[in-house]
Length: 215
Image (tube, rainbow, N blue to C red; front, side, top):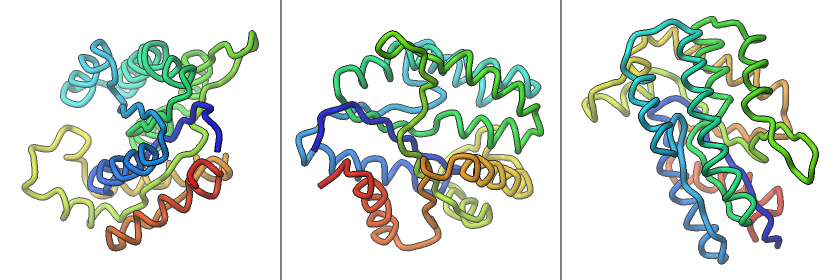
């Protein structure tokens, strides 16, 4: 086992079970003595949380959404993610850049080339004196049919502007996640989230163990 910092992102539409399994994975890492940084996007810093509230509830076009979420991401990287990785912690993040490509890119139909440009500009960090595009070492994608997610969320809370979108929007989002996985398959672990809780938990743990990050 190594004490190097690890960066794992959790992706999927609301209702897919991300939060439950982030907590379970955090407990597994803590059980092996690892320090954990639990965080989320948009959010994770005071500034990014303010931008999150605007992003989730105020009407705006796709470019404004993209600029807001990448501004929040830059602050998040500088103040939370990079310092935690430098300390050798395991960073577990509820959503990262794949969500932007899935929601703003595939869901909203926003220009993917612009998103790629913003990704490079915002996520390039210095490591050992050389530029590095910061990405998760592992992205766990909870793939769930939109209709099932809607049933799980029904009556639990007032939906934000994304959760209130029709099922067709989320089918485009799922296609966006699939495209991101196709572009970088070694980084992704797709989990069928339409299974029992324990089965999903075991698949999440297996995905992390396959990389040698858990005993």
